[in-house]
Amino acid sequence: MKKTNFLLVFMLLLSACGPTSDESGAISTCRATVDAMSALTGGLELPANFCTENPVKTGSEFDVMQYFSVLDHLSMQPGYVLDYVYHYDGMGGYPVLYVRPAGQPFYATEADLAAGGDSTSTLDYVQTDDTPESYFQFVVLAKMGSQFYKFWHANYSDSQIVCDKAGVTAIVASLDGDFGYRISLAARVRAALLKDVGPSVKVGGQTVEVRLVTFTRWGGFYQETYTLSRSMPHTIQDVQEKNLVPYECGVMF
Image 1 (tube, helix red, strand yellow):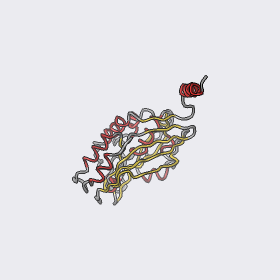
Image 2 (cartoon, rainbow, N blue to C red):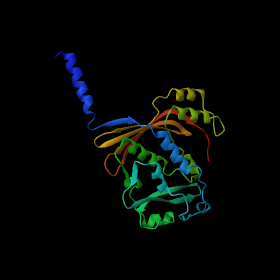
Image 3 (cartoon, rainbow, N blue to C red):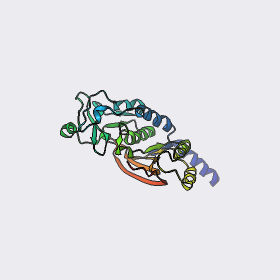
Image 4 (cartoon, rainbow, N blue to C red):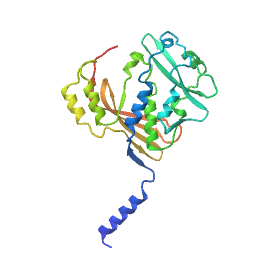
């Protein structure tokens, strides 16, 4: 057999076997996932009982367990639920997520949580189904899980996941000067030249790499690379950021 034919057969055999410890791929469901998560919280109004010092949660507010109707490759560790209390002070307000046993009453205040809550990371109780999609959804939960009922300075935390070039175009079009500075021509050009903005996941033997592009009005477009533990708990071991297109809206709350 000629050498070239042997190499061709060898390469075909390797491709037929497929990857043994690594799986990579783009996440085609990004737009549907991010839009559905935003739809759950986008129209929420801050409850009056949260607009006061030492706010008390009554149980009638938004239920964060609804996230798992969208993040369908994730689940809570059996016997536990995701919940939150609300933090409010002179600088703003935002939810503080925590995990509690399903049969235990929810904490009404931040002080109650501090006194009796579990200090373990909330994400430690979140399970994946070990698919690339599940690890992307894990990062979505980490980024978007607390982005509701935000008040005043908490609105600086506005980072959003960019799923495709259409998303880039829509964001750039929105930076027309109605809220802060208009985006510069140079930044428009750089944004137009962005490639492969959709998220991707690389699953290795021990760790998982999730790469995505995000945008914030206080910084611009970023590439974020998350390294997660593949086994439970899926600890976020490292986050790397690269500013792709700088932009500052100039707004100060």
